Image (spheres, helix red, strand yellow):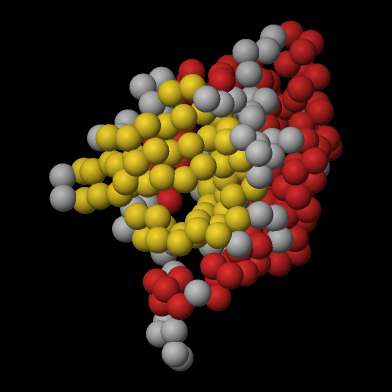
Length: 242
């Protein structure tokens, strides 16, 4: 399958600190790619490089065959790259539906009844339709996580970046969220998902990459990656022989 997203030797440094070290990987159309690594490994920084929030010191970001390395975050969103944030950041004084309208109008460039239809469709898909007229600040954690997902989907993405969207949820809430994300696989959207809740990740993704100190250290089939000695030592923080 053709690649929808590629990082080509992307590096980012802040003085002596390297958050991305010559990273190269690709995402196929319709694929779900999982990203794991210890805290501070550079996973969110990688998302910031993909979305254009920060610019690399070197390397290229390719989206749908186009070099987007120098495009703004807003322009990349309009092209079809959307993300959720690790800490939900809704407009608390707006309703759930109004939050979705902002995403549809500003992210997807829709207007009027088209934007309204998108908002309603996505709220139904993410299980939030009954909360459409509730203020976002009144939502539970699971509902705020769902709203993060809904807002990203309202931007009509071709690539959806999820940043620890299962973090902080109970087991049953996590299962419910995983079911929603798995359902998205049928829509054709490609997914890159950073997650520490590994069982949730393994229920969805086709492939895993592992990042440590900004460097890609492993890539492949999820079960094989999780069983590897290097990943157990670096990601799980244990001796492989333990």
